Image (cartoon, rainbow, N blue to C red):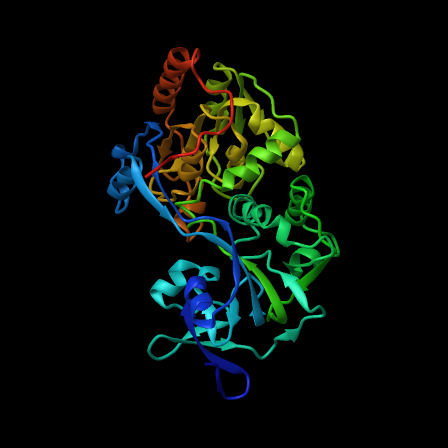
Length: 406
């Protein structure tokens, strides 16, 4: 039940979408079923044991064969819902847990317009909420949408799965700073979103700009997550296969190094030396910013080896073929499993090289620049060459394999 506190705030509980659906007796459509599967180890090389940090044992355990369980992905209409700028949804006195960063819920820390209060309750600032100009809107935003990786791996596959539930004249929600930026120029991220929706064949009629304070919508069409960030549902690859096919994905032995030197953080400090070594192994130097979305799909689907520092651009490994070698370069203590999980679902091979930080200017550890140890990189490259020679006759060039179901 929704309780009003004062004039401009309301008290809510955090609940999962399936709990809300059950309590309210809401009708919904299953887009991909619940699944238990085995995520086979794809780790072929790592120097993680050269660094001592809190989560190293956890990461090494994740690099082994893992049993994974994923909830179903559903499409459901939520009545009289409030959507905040980054996709946080409030409906009938409940904050939809799936739409709030997990660390916020777990640590009960203040988050934008949400503040923890007594017990399990949260207070939501609704002082600036505006009413929707349309009766029905499709929720296409979430935390982190400003980053290409979140859009590609976690939002686009959900919309693709729900494409039959999105009318061609539908209104979709997007952050106002994407669609109506202060300088009047659409963001590069918004252009990538538009191009990806078009390539996926997802038509829509209009875009509703979400203001900072949020919007109240009479009927919100919500598509639930296709698994957590580090344990995604195999069904997401239905979208990636389709997109690769539409751009004419082709087989080649192309090797690419994807730079981050044109962005502000997590750059390889000794990139010139790294590229000099990689060049001897046939790698091309790639700036993803020079490619439109379809060009990125074609580029990554045609490569046999993909190297570079972890970042949004490397989310494009989603389009790589089964058997592709992934050579990520990683700040030594970074504990993110997002990319490894994506590569494992796609049947790729993983050869990671970790290195110490070379700067300490960002409060977030993983945003600092770092160094790649050349002898370690040589070891990883030697193993890639060895594995390539051994597996070349039998390496799969066909569809992405799905993990074995349990």
